[in-house]
Length: 353
Image (cartoon, rainbow, N blue to C red; front, top):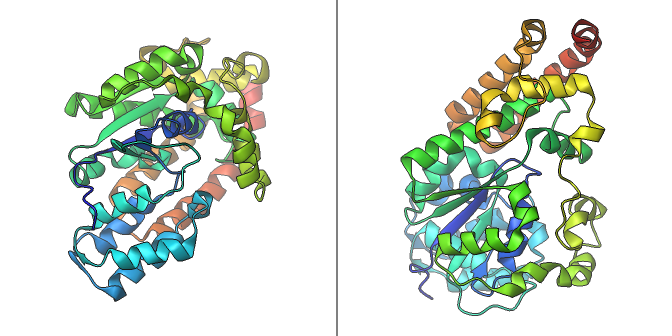
């Protein structure tokens, strides 16, 4: 069994639609990095397998079937029969975490690879579990990307990733930023933050800095990742949804999606977004249009903010619940929140005009 113990892992985290996929593609184009598409394999399966150290045919095949049935795993476009043969060859003494590395190294990249120095994982959902991932992979590093909360909101609702409730989406943005700031204080050498706006404005400099963070050489070819667009389009032709979500990644990096909130977001929603983001927006380098506290607006959105706080408390406290149960409970509560917001949004508009 090949030795993967000397290959460390890094994780790209951040809110969905903040540039995490762009970062993944830039690193995937690097000859010394392997980073498959997003699939929450590690945190979904570690509880089941982290105590196993001897892998016989039964346990290794159990892991195989669990892996291939993970959400988004089909986007790896991997030959499942050959993949199964690899699993069978991994029988013996090892850990779940070393097997994770072997699984990731099996990803058939679109780009030519040399010696792999880092294994990457891009999962926005992992942002809440950095402490756990550090416990699992003590050598791991984390790259956190953030984006203007107003642009992030517009991008999220465009692809129906989240319930289009302004204060909830912005609360999630604020919570994620604060969480990472706390983590950077606790693990200063393990977490690196970057802004989407800086990445698209001066990509080469930002990627050079990130390569320095990972102690790998910068490769100019990563900036031309989009040269693989025809291959990418052909491989994902089966999914119009995927192509729609990532259509901007099929062309050179540009600043066209910066500050779109100024023309596409109504004033009421801007007021709400600025109110919820608060000083966290300021400390993150984003300029609020409305800085004055509006107590009536705050009272109207308070139930949504309470829901957001309870939701994250539930997620962090309810990790012992099965993954599917947690998702079901969040979706169930989300239905009621969406109904509340729909009923009250006209009144909020009237009272804050």
